[in-house]
Length: 354
Image (cartoon, rainbow, N blue to C red):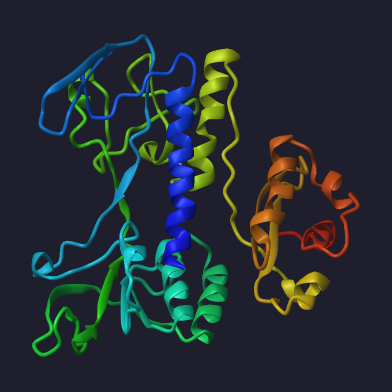
């Protein structure tokens, strides 16, 4: 599985680089870039030698983010992992402890539980997926718990140290009156920080917030005219689909002054047990939900927790992007057997919010 993963990622990365280096009117410089002014950038080699100096009327920052680990006492003395290197493992963790209750934490929890590892997830709050509504988060937790993933809520690790008897294993301590937790592998999924700390933004006068994120307006413009920030570094989503799609905003800015609606799935309430295709596949966990403005009939938000929800959600996204009222979707004929076929029926059950 690791070899397959490496092959797929390698093909994608190499293909993009080959395309960039062979594209007309594109020059690729590999090095460390820093602003030297609002319209100028220097690029250096790893040893600090100047590679090239560039000036431009329009500059787009797309430096991304990197995983961070919680600042625990003793962390510098142990081996730990983030999402950047956990899949480089060639051995199966006996007991993987994950700090964090986000999507990244839960994805890896499910992956390694399916592999056969014991998995424990440490959550600082009282439920996972703190950005989501409680019923959605609880629905996800039930599925994962049924698969054997263990959860500890309301805990905050404060220190780590090497296990006294098992080489490379770690012991995790807590401030609360909680026994030390032993683990063979420790994964931090506690967030990411933007790659803006060594980029010379001060020299260009580009503002950042206290987290190092570059604030932008609805068209992804920074506070410096002619400079845009796209992708995770602008803090507007940090999802693959939002980062990848930022280019559409930039193209609209440069070509026709347009803008784009940012789409984010909220939650759902109609059970997936109502969907014939989900029952046929034996995957009936989860539900659908949509929020509609009663006056304008515009769809304000929607989400799907369930099999193939990542595909079916685009039905809502397209209607919302077109600013079409929900009856357009309600009276559409969707193909059977699919997950999307229940979407029109969902709107038949609209009720006033309490």
